[in-house]
Image 1 (cartoon, protein in one colour):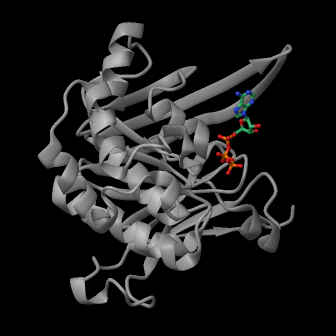
Image 2: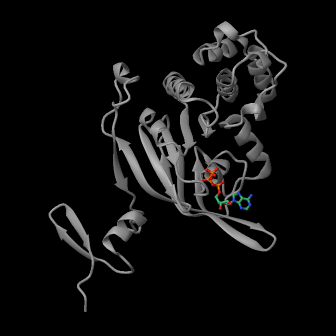
Image 3: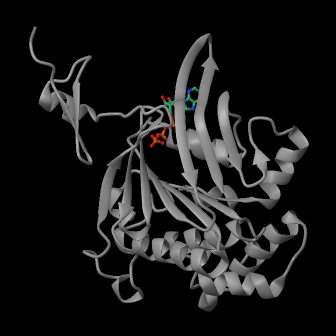
Length: 286
Ligand SMILES: Nc1ncnc2c1ncn2[C@@H]1O[C@H](COP(=O)(O)OP(=O)(O)OP(=O)(O)O)[C@@H](O)[C@H]1O
């Protein structure tokens, strides 16, 4: 579904260049539920904005489905945004109409996308657990309920890719858990590929794979040891991840700064292969 290789994004303002993504590699399969974590300023939102067609990459490869986001024309980009992606922001006021009801909000989004399907609007509202509030105006809903409405709206155009930027950033832990459960349900019910950006590692338990971004590059990947069973969904200890360092197609590997500092690695290391293991150690002093 997503194939980024050597993705670069450079922002230029007042003659100053900021390299937000510096050769990022990322592959996401169709139907995957996937998270991107990273510290503030690591490039998470930049990546999401590129995948959502809100911003243009500077160089590299950025393919989503059949679309090449580096070469896409303006008209195709409008089509891409309208038909392929759904977006959820931390601040959901960007796509909510406060004086309309939950149902009217979802139906309005459908009309903007090209056609209203009332039955599907109701189905989406049921999936996000808001059927009892369907005729309430958004001003009468809690923050968590408004965020769930935003999730229903994001699927109004039946996207194949759902992008969520810190979707649980402004709700409490319990609501955050509930929202992650809704993403999982929508992912199962509709097969939509879900990409969630967060800096909260505890959310990672709810997804199968997590990629960490550091300084605009993918640095490590955490993969769930075994998929969660339905009975384990609410068990916080279930579904541990195993962490891997990412090796790019040229064989380059990033060693996290903590490890480099601990071992005292500067500009050279000695590699020794033994069976299926490679040992990295400091060179002998000359
Ligand atoms: N429009 C812009 N113009 C100039 N620099 C930008 C712009 N947008 C982002 N940047 C810079 O690019 C880098 C990556 O920013 P980005 O917003 O992608 O990080 P992030 O990981 O999403 O951070 P946060 O978690 O704080 O949202 C930062 O150094 C940021 O200052």
